[in-house]
Image (cartoon, rainbow, N blue to C red; front, side, top):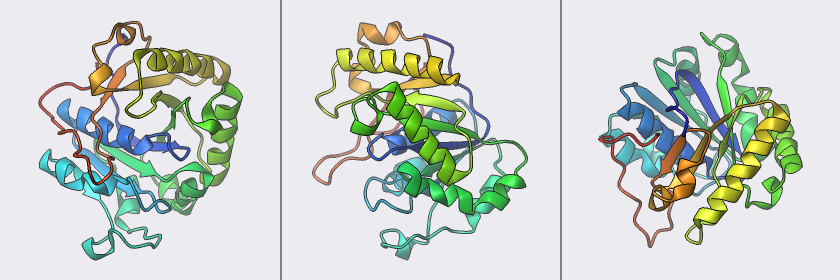
Amino acid sequence: MAAALHLNGILIIVGNYGSGKTEVAVNLAVDQQAKGRQVRLADLDLVNLYFRTREARHALSALGIEVILPPEGWLQADLPILVPQVAGLIRRPGELAILDVGGDGVGARVLAALGEAFQNAPETAQVFQVVNPFRPNTDTVARCLAMRAVIESASRLKVTGWVGNAHLMDETTADHIRQGHDLMLALADASGLPLACMAVADGLMHTPVVDTMACPVLTIRRQMVPPWRRPVVLSGEDTILQ
C-alpha cells in the first residue's frame, strides 16, 4: 500500500446517493484526529433525513472532534438549515475542516450558496468524490464522470480526487473490493485525478486484496446503521488509514 494520506485545510466530501460519503467523512475525521490534527466536521447534508453525520455526533465529540450542526432542537427537522458557523469554518478552517455534503447535484447546491465564503477562504478546497461502483449511477467510468459533471455544475467547485468505497453492505466480499479497486484505477486514469484512498470495512481489512492496493486504505467502522443495529465503536487510539 501507498503511504498514509495526510490532509490539511478544507476537505469537501461529495458523491451520489448511497455512495457512503458520510461514512467516509466520519472515518476520515477520526483517522486524521488520531494522527494529531485538530479536526472539525460540518454536516451539510440538507436533503437526506437519514444517515447523516449528526448521527455520530456523540462518538465524534468524545474523541475531541468538533461537529458543526444546526441547533439541537432542529437536528431532525425536515428543513434545509445552513448554520452561519459553516461560512466561518471555511474562512478559518484551522488544521482540517471536513464538509460532508448531500448526495448528487441536489445536495451539492449548498456549496454554491457558500461561494462567497470559498472565495475568501485562505486556500483552495480539496473536493473528494466518493464512488461506490456497485451503485447504478456509478458502475462504469463513464457514469462516474457524468456524476462528477453534475456535482461540479451544481456546486461550482471542481472535484480534485476520488475515494473508492466498493461495498454491498453486509454482503461485501474481498472480490467486491478488488473489482472496485480496478474500476477506481481506471477512473483515475481516465479523469487525470488521483485516487486518494479506498475505503474498506473493518472486517475485510486483513484480506490479501488490501495489501495489493496502490493507494492508502481507510478502515470504515460503520456509524450509519439502522435503528436495530449498533454502530461500530470509533477509536482514536490506532491509525485507521494505513
